[in-house]
Structure formats: C-alpha cells, structure tokens
Image 1: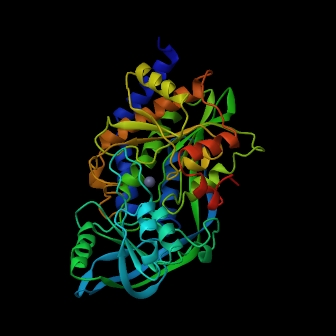
Image 2: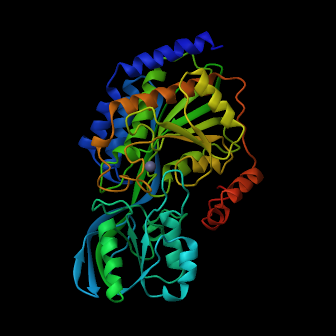
Length: 470
Ligand SMILES: [Zn+2]
C-alpha cells in the first residue's frame, strides 16, 4: 500500500513538471545561447552561472559554485593527409589535450583496438600511427574505452593514435585523451604525450580500403593549446528536516565537447536534475533528509568535478551520502525509456524494482560497475550509487551514437523526454530521502577492491592512482 504522504508529494511533482516547459527552455538556453560549455572555458563558466541563477530562482537552498583548478584545452588547426598509397586530404579533428604536432608515419591498423589486437601487433606498433575503432560496443555490450586504447598505443611506442567513428554520417569523433600524469592539474601534466585524432567512419573506411593497395602513410599537422584554468560544480539543495546531514545527491554534468552543443551528453541530464530540483523546492520542510542537486563540471575531461566533490565526503565530514544518482544520459529521447544502472549493489536491485512497481512506473534496473561517468568517484569510496539514463534515437547506433560528435544537438532532445526523466528522478529522490529502511549500505575499501576486480578495472584504477581514493 502506498504511503499517502508520498502520494501527495508525487502529485505535486507530476503536476509541477508535467504542466511546465521550463526544462525545454532551460536546455535551449544552455545549448543555443551559451553553447558547448567545454571544461575550463568561458562557455562552461557561463553555463555554471546560468544554472546557479536558475537554482536560486527556483528556491533551492545554499546555492553555490564549487571551484576547482584544472587544465583546459583549445583546438587550433588539424590537417590529416594520406600520403601513400595515394594522396588524399581527410577531414579530422584533434581530441582534447592533443599536443601540437607535425608527424608523418606509416599506419598500423589495430581494428577494434581491444587489448589482444594491440598484443598481437605489438612488434609493428613502435614509430607508427595507430588506427583504431573509437568505440565498438552495441547497446548493452561492454567494450574497451578510448582512453584504454590510447594507453595501449602509447605503451607500445605509437607516435599518433587515430580514432575512427563506427557510425556513418561523416561525423568525426571526439573525446579527451589522457595526459602524462592523470593525477596532475597543470598543463604539463594534462597535455597528452602523443596526438589523438578523431576521424569519421567514412575516412577510416577509405584508409582501410586503400591499405589493400599498399601500406598507408599519414601526415598530421595540428596546433592546439593546453592551459591552466578553473572549473565549477554548481550546487543547490532542499534541506532535510529530521536528518539534514544525510544526503541524497543527484545530477548530471553540464560541460560538453567543443565541437557540439552537448544537448544529449549531457545537457539533458543536467536539466533533468535542475527540473527535479525545481519540483522538489516546492516540498521544502517535508523531506526528512537533504536532497542535493549538483551540476558537475569537467566530466568530459576526466570526471574532474565529481572527483573534487566526492573527496569532501571523507571520514571527517559531518555529512553522509546515502545515495548518488548520476544523470549522465538522462532525459534524452522521447521519454519512457529510462533505465537505472547500479554500481555492483545487488541488494538495491529488488529495492528499485519495487519502487518502480509502487510508483506505477517500472523501469529496467541493471547492476554493472563501470568507471566512465560521474558516479565512479563515489563508487570507489563505497558510496551507494547508480546512473539513470534514457535510451534515445541512437538506440541501435554504436558506442555513444550522436554523442562526442557535432551531431549532439538540441533537435535530438524533446520536452517530453526531459519531463519523464525529471519526474522519475524527483520521485526516486523523495523516496530515498524519506525511507527509514533504505537497504543500501556503504562498502568498505576491501569490498570496493573486490567490486573493481570483478568489473575488470582494478589494475587500471590503481595505476592511475585513483584507488584507493585520495
Ligand atoms: Zn556524459
């Protein structure tokens, strides 16, 4: 039987969000007026100020910008020329933190670019330009991340890594590449040791086709700049009345890639969180625990805002995070396609499934830990967390679909999808804030180590100095 007080709060949330186009107007402003919001840029700063102003307007409490130092990056020119077996200019973009370079070398094609591919071709990689598929995972599949492939190429002596999009449409793929010292924040730490270049499916296919006539060579000329900057998390909350130091944290990342509007990744998730916050602000004085809305900065360049924020909930902190709901990918598409992915927390699968039934809004709940979005800095601290995302028109596309290309634009997001994800987010937040019998529990570092090992990502996190968390 559904609690009458929860029903009343649900009616408020549904009425407030379903009868408003605020989510759409806010996302349109973020994308059309402010623009890409690349980490550490003036555009990101403008996005932060806009989101903070909206939080204040909606009556969220303790609204603040949380600043942290980082190194940003600015693209210049990028020219890619096939010089053998015949001459051809190819369209390409430098990936964030690509250094300036003028390099010509033979190409070694590692295909999908999984670890066995790199191992099999190891003796042919030194001094060469590696050509690899950027992302090959179809929906639901787990394949290696761009940054893994980049690391494997460098370890084996490659001089450039060229990433090929697997979705047709002349879309050059982007994504940040790893610097010399992943823990450092200076431009020297952050700049990548070798260039990373993004090309379209069609350009990659042309290189592979022409390779049948003779070993291809490429010349890459690019000028870019890595520089010291700052970035911001944007935070506002509804204070809990009974247990204000027990916090439910929710939000997406508002930064995007400089080639696009970042509408789906992750303007939509950011606005999902803001819209949920707008509705929850009307429940002030009714929530037992604090619900904190966060818009993470600099996710696309290494989850920097989330790492910075998660570090504040250490043993000395008065506050305790009950649950973190990451909204990376929430609010895309037409709505009704939301799904929750928990970070290896089997006790919470039946819990969230039951909430879905009780709310008369069932959604798939998966349980699979990955390290590639803002939930992860909380996961390594043993904090219960999950990511809510919405499938969209990219269903059937490979990897991120439109994401990380110029095509991640506002036309692919819809008010209805934003409303449905915001309603689900707000209703879950209310339950997480009110439930005195929430079964989620903090993991010990030993338990987290086992989770990371089971997910096959322990070694990489230890090498990057991310585990144990600092
Ligand atoms: Zn994202």
